[in-house]
Image (cartoon, rainbow, N blue to C red; front, side, top):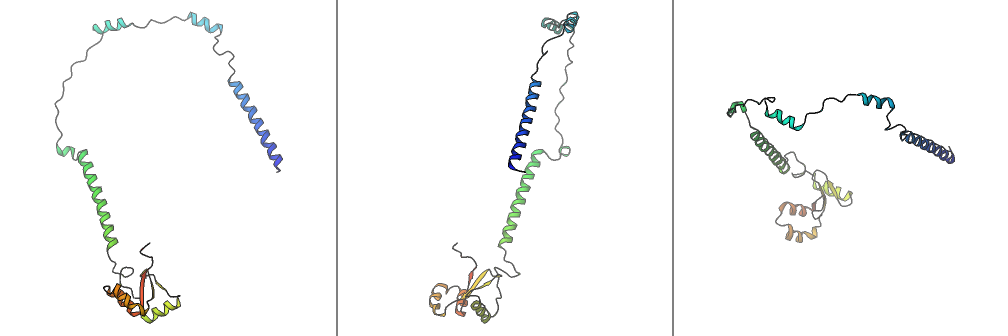
Amino acid sequence: MSTGLIIAVVVIAAVVFGAIVVMTTARSTDVRGAGALSRETRASDRKAKVGTTATTGREVELAARTTDIVKAAPAEIAPFVAPDAEAVGVSRRMFFNRTAITLMGASVGAFGASAVAFLWKGADGGFGSKINAGRLDDIIANIKANDGFLYLAEARAWVTEYPKGALGKAQAVYGSQAPVFTGMQAGVVALYQKCPHL
């Protein structure tokens, strides 16, 4: 279909739709005969007898003063008797208090258990425990084969060579941390996979 044909179809559809709208609104606004009664209707209205008139306010008040309206017998007030504890079981207040305390206890307990599980050191190895990375000669060979760094996924650490000439400076800084300084003396150092300063 060409663009001109599409435009022609849309214009024709709009004209037909507009004509339908005009015809329906013209028909709904046709008010001929609205509000006008026929002669027959007016005649039947005149012949209709009006029923008895409604009672006036004075008649209602007069009926209230007479015996037409029967007064209700006075009712006796029943004395209040508190229900026994066995019949009630648990009051609404007790139910809500116990529910609130139970939910709070469960929430605190779940949080405490998750905190302990997060901090508990796993005994199965992996990050946070001792990792067997292999022999030192194999580690140094893998470091050299991987452009100076070896990534150990179990330890979440990068292992690289430490220069032997810098052991004096390492002694001053890491002398109190025996596992770190021992690795530097062996010629390697393990670095966490992400810089702790970031």
